[in-house]
Image 1 (cartoon, rainbow, N blue to C red):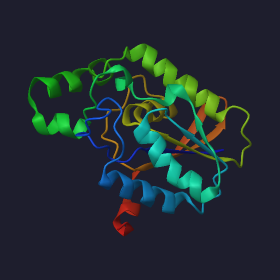
Image 2 (image 1 turned 90 degrees about the horizontal axis):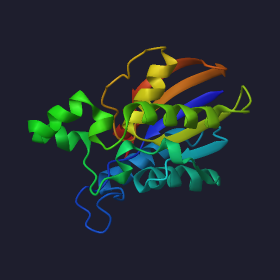
Image 3 (image 1 turned 180 degrees about the horizontal axis):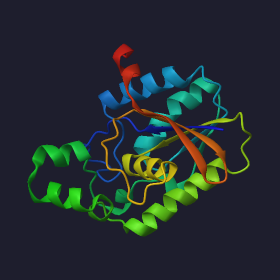
Image 4 (image 1 turned 120 degrees about the horizontal axis):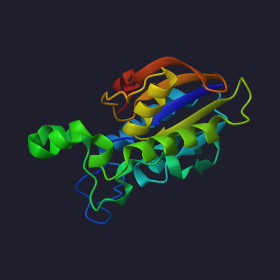
Length: 197
């Protein structure tokens, strides 16, 4: 099967109503439209999202265009779901200082999660996503940077988790060959953003 992982669009970090679970920003909405445009003709049969608002809102545009429901799988959520305020990796990096150093040392722990438990949860979500899908199925998951890094590390057979900055609205493509066998087709595609207005 083909598994497509999409990082949510850029959220509105300054939103006062739900600072821990912000909606998409204007840029994030553009990124969501670009992802929906890219994937709209790819024969997607199933759409899954993290329960967090930024991922759900990114998924909804594609779901509406394809007249498919958005299935929520809780374990695709970000490690920061229990924090009082969302802080993007980009914001932390721009601020530098002690918070950025702590994030670099242990990103999952900094976001409030236990690294081993979080990894296990993401891999459980991955298993639930690919279970019983046909070899020709195309499934898209709208999630977050750390889960995408965990899935890539797993697919590549790495002991440690990769730590690359996954772009907002980016697309990462994998093939599932059954069992624990995966192939990586692309990582962090963002070219589709150039044609979004």
